[in-house]
Amino acid sequence: MNERKGFSLPGIATLVVLLILGLLLLWWIVATLVAGDPAAAIAPIVLGALWLFLLGGFFQVQPNEARVLQLFGRYAGSVRDAGLRWTNPLYSKRTLSLRVRNFDSDKLKVNDADGNPIEIAAVVVWQVVESYEAVFEVQDYESFLKIQTESALRQMSQNYAYDSHDERPSLRSHGEEVNAHLRDQIQERLNKAGLKVIEARISHLAYAPEIAQVMLQRQQANAIVAARERIVEGAVGMAQMALKRLEADGVVELDPERKAAIVANLLVVLCGDRATQPVVNTGTLYNG
Image (cartoon, rainbow, N blue to C red; front, side, top):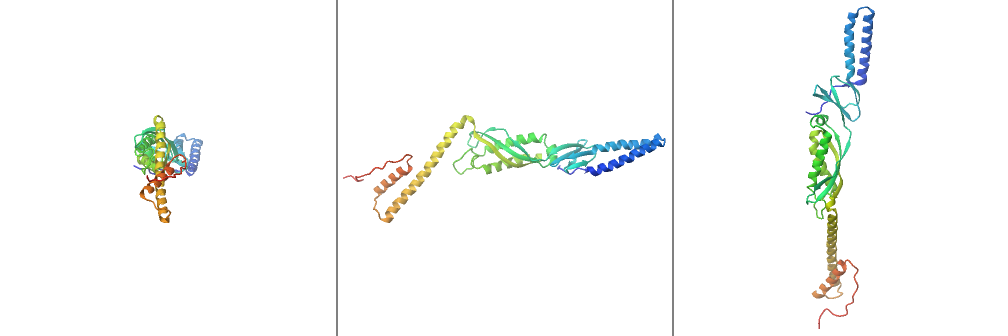
């Protein structure tokens, strides 16, 4: 069953009608008593009691709010029209907020795709969109949201590494993709509860304290290796370019041994992490 519109009437118009009926009943009761016929006043008195009972049907609906109506435990519809409304006084009315709300999850300790323990938390922006499902399909939709968010966060964390130096998506470098995946995972779990996930974002991400220092050193080492690879790649390219220019301009004729020496010297200069000291070679590469 899905949400349906419940029976209700505009409150102001209904109140005016009931006030007019109340005045007529009061005049009727007074008229019968003045006429000296108490038995004739029984009917207007009974109608007066019914009139008082009908006054119990008024209720107020705030903007972005719904009232879920029930009659002896059975669902009778939902009212979303803001303002003063009137319905069957026998209906019980449960208030349900439709406003946008935030949920900030606790920090969870989970293992990422590489098996490293990490701490992760998320913020979820959500709202109720289906009053029937939110009230009758789950015991407590707010607790349901909390549990399902943590479950989705744990599962999503196991699909991504905390950090990656290759092309694989990671929790740290692919924020938009990870957030979209998390939102879809949570929404899939909350559909049965009548809740809509507007946005889901990771609010906290860190290695677990027991391995944080080790992983920091590992990140630094990986960064150094990656930087060295780029330096070597650039140095080799510059050495190749230098040899081609020397040969193309006819500056000097180089045999394979001299080419190897030039390349070696250039690589030492370009790849070194300290300033090099110039040395003038006044001898020759050849013996004898």
